[in-house]
Length: 209
Image (cartoon, rainbow, N blue to C red; front, side, top):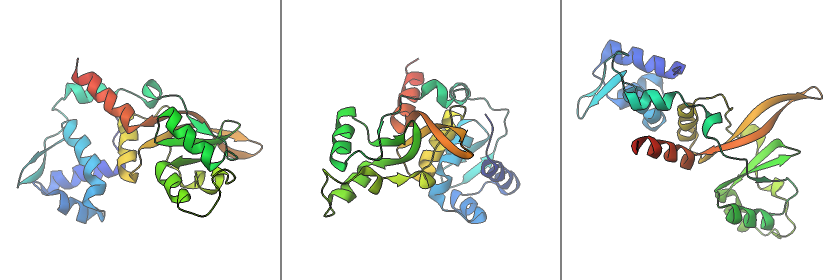
């Protein structure tokens, strides 16, 4: 598994200054403690760091092996992603709400001819429902989060990278996309979806083996 630049920096800090608390690490990186939670979890899971209550994190090194972490680290998004579930930009707010309940998902992909235009979550629907617009006439394109603000992943990303992205950006689901150049522009073709539920099932599968 390839570590991110931030994870490498965390290792460097802990190796040079450990034992050190998570809050101190966060201060040195000028981020919040919650933003580091997934990074620290990954680094302790794969055996690079260890943590002791009231003491903090200290460096162990990559010689410590965690078989579970090693196996999960091998999985790519392509191997666990589900089919994309979505609507078109012209679908009404009402029909989008029905689709969300029918498909039993918390996030829908909004796509046009298979290319990502945005996503819509339960929060987006609730916010729109509180407005004065007619849900039968309002297109979901007026309520969705546009592509420019959507957090995505690719089929070749590692599952742990996708999980970290969901934690970092506080989202429940990521569109799985492939970048395509079409008519001189870069577009993103939706090929799947991965959610917190997907990852939880993967962890459960390994836990029951």
